[in-house]
Structures are given as structure tokens and as C-alpha cells.
Amino acid sequence: MRFVASSLLVAVFATAAHAAPPLPALGVQAEHITVSGISSGGYMAVQFHVAHSAIVDGVGVIAGGPYECAAGSMWQALSNCMEPSDSKPVPDAATSAARVADDAAAGRIDPVAGLAADRVWLLTGGQDRTVARPVMDALDAFYRRWVAATQIAYVTVPDAGHAMLSLDDPQANACDTSEPPYINRCEGVDAAGQLLAHLLGPLQPKAATASGELVTFDQSPFTRAGGSAGMSDGGYAYIPIGCRAGGCKLHVAFHGCRQSADQIGDRFATRAGYNRWAEANRLVVLYPQTTPRYGWAWSGNWPRWVFNPKACWDWWGYESVDYATRNGPQVKAVKAMIDQLTRPAAPSQ
Image 1: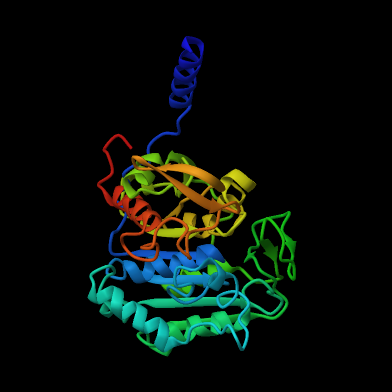
Image 2: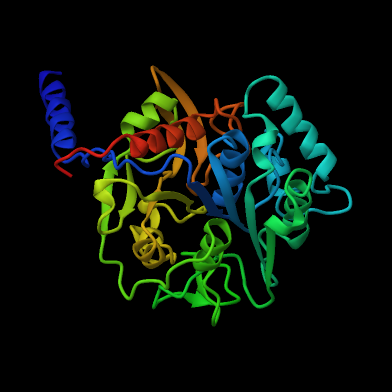
């Protein structure tokens, strides 16, 4: 028993010694926050946008769907919200809007008035058999309840499969592929550049190289504070040259299922296509990370059974019934990361 206890202490101290550094305070502009995501990350981007519409002023979604589409059911997520049918349709805009109204009335999300001035960019692939076109159509109809048509861009790439479409990954899959790492090359299609230009306005041409820093940081203080058992201990942030001194904008990019650092390393954070645009346009990019879980995991002071072997973001309630709201563990954790990034930059940085 003494040997076991000693081994555990060694393991704990070894882990602490190799912990990633803290997320730096960078003084990013709190009034210029945008989000985007692919697949489960697309659903997460919608949830975060709706929950925090008072601070988020734009969202980009590749292969996602409307707010609370799954209504807390994994089975509805897999059917109605990915491969809908006549018997299992995707929720219509009125149904989704009613859920938003209920959550807003209960104070679980920001008032819906915060959506009106925002910009929305959507992309669907014509060869995507994972999240079918009707789901993205429903997301478009959902946003049109509050956002003017002139502020919404809905892009269709006929040959694209289920993936992030990037020109920055020399080993990207073919355009029509729907396989890991879910980063495809479709000639001439730069999803990150297109969505950032729509959300932020005209951009400077992207830099020849991403010359800033891709930092790995310790997510655990934020996940513990949010009560999340489904997120990783480490996350990434891309910090352009000059952004350590403050004053840059912030974009949050949510990876999809099977795209976490535990599964593909930093490939999404380095090759999804955001960083060279960020470098040229004084834009910090936060890449929060989930982790594969299948079993008991600690959440706060209590163990929780988590079934998420593909490291998807929680868009059906595997962490909490409040998953889509400001009280959702993952939403809370990411919001805390944003709060840290908006704090004034330290003079020594």
C-alpha cells in the first residue's frame, strides 16, 4: 500500500511538472469576438453564439445545425439532426425558435435581441453524407428568424464531403472525402478565409507564413471551473506577432469529432486555415479542445459517466442537460477562456 501511495504521488508530481503553461492575458477586444466550427464544433459554435449573443457578433458553421436540435437526445442527434427523414425530420425554425425563447425567458441564454446585428456564414458540402443538406437548410432558416438575409452567407460546395475545407494542409484529403482528419482540399475553397471575411469585413491578404506563436495552454482551470469532464487538459491558441501587447480581435475555432489534439495532434490548429489570415489581420485564434471519454470521469467533486469516444463537442447532453446554455459545462469553460484572453496584457508580455 505504501508503494502504491508513493507511486501515485510521483505520478501526480510528474504530471504537474509537465503541465502546460497558463493561457496568457492578451487584452483582446471584448467587442470583437467571433466563433466558428465544423460538425460537432459547428453545433457548439451555434450554441455558444446563441448563449452569449451579447458578446459574440458573428458565427461560421460548416456542417452543423440549429440550436438544441437534439433536444438532449443522442438518438435524435444521430437521426433528425444528421440524417433526417420523413419520420424523423430536423426541427423546423419555429420549434428551434421556441427553445431559444424558453431559454432566454429563463435567463439561461442572452436575450435574443443580441442576434440581430450579427453576421452568419454557413457552408454545406454536396457530398456530405454525415450532416445532410436539410440540416444546414434548417440552420439557415433558424438564423433568418432574427438575422437579416443580407447578413447571412450560405455557401454550397458541390464536390465537398464532410470536412473543414482548407488550402493550408499539404496532406489534406480529396474534396469529396468524409474521413479523418476531416480536413479536405477543394480547389480554390478557403473556408476559414471566407468565413472570417464575412464575419469581420474586408481582410488584409493572408500572410505568407504564420509567423506568430501557436501556444499550448493548460485548460484544466477552466474545465474545473465549468464542471466539464469532456474537455482535454490542454488547448491551443494562435497569437500573431504584436498581439502579446493587446488590442487584437479574437476568434474561437471549434474542431469536429475525431479532430481533437488527442486524435490528430495540432493538425487542426495548424492546418485548418485560420492562422495565416489571423497573422495578417491581428486576430488571436483560440482552439479549445475536447478529449475522447468512455466511462467515469471527474467533474468538479463528483464522478460522471461520459460516453463520448469520438471527442465530439457536447451538442446532445452527454455532459449536462444545460449543455446548450450559459450553464453548460463546456460553454462555461470556453467563456472563462475568453474572459482570460480579454484581461489586460501583462507589461512583460
